Length: 356
Ligand code: TTP
Ligand code: MG
Image (cartoon, rainbow, N blue to C red):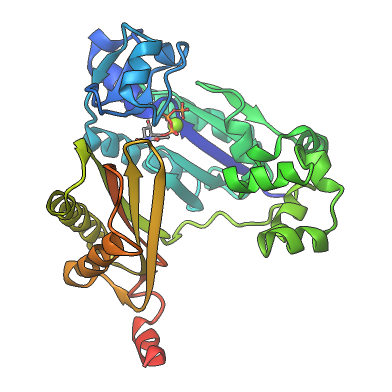
């Protein structure tokens, strides 16, 4: 029997919460973020998106596109409250809830707590309850696997619902541009384009062997999703794979002392987040964005899982110097820890013994 998977994503999340809590922002082009010269738009209301304002866009560009754009700073605590309320609603239907971010989750409702047969019906009920309890709208995508449910929710935003039925799935995937495929980022899409692969149909012409030769292990996944096959389960207790934080300087920076001071602060944030989630990581990544927006990442993987500031900061410091200290002015610095594991769950003790 095929599964019933729902993907739910809140609409213009931070901006919608701000419009709800501040009536003066309602029906207005609103960006959440710092509106100063070096600020970045975190998200924008749908009214602002009409002008081309998008997440991650420098505020200066957003203001050029939409001169009457209003800015407001984020209130993360308010967003967390909503995120918890929404998750609580999901729990009334299923325990198989896999949060992807603060405003997005997969639900497996094949067997749901209310014994509702139609997944569409479940999704509608959830959307109504979200609206009743938070006065915010969400969009749902429904299908028989995660890949298609997520694509479906992106098709009818905001405040929409889209179903991709099993009988339509194969034909639908053929018409889909490969950039939309799960696991295909910018670099892979470029590589595919060089091989003449632009759509699902193009991808389908390739054998599993040829795809693995070109793309490694993930080639097998591409072979399968080109045929609308994705058996990844909805995983409620998924461990986060990485923790990171970053910060843009108020002015481009060239001197070491300022950079180290900033990195110290960012590392402290990362360490706090790891402690909150009881996680340990083995790969430290330093992200550097230069004044010309070029981005560089430098990583180092160690044998022993790290968590404390004293362990992590020296590696960050090292990465700032190697292969060389930044030769151009720096706009942003970020620190990420990946290769995460939870102490309690996979025998950290054993890991240490094996490393010895
Ligand atoms: P998204 O779900 O990607 O965006 P959204 O909810 O604002 O809009 P949509 O209707 O298209 O779903 O991200 C959720 C929140 O995460 C978003 O409201 C703000 C935050 N966010 C950032 O801070 N930076 C980013 O680059 C993105 C994409 C999101
Ligand atoms: Mg969203």
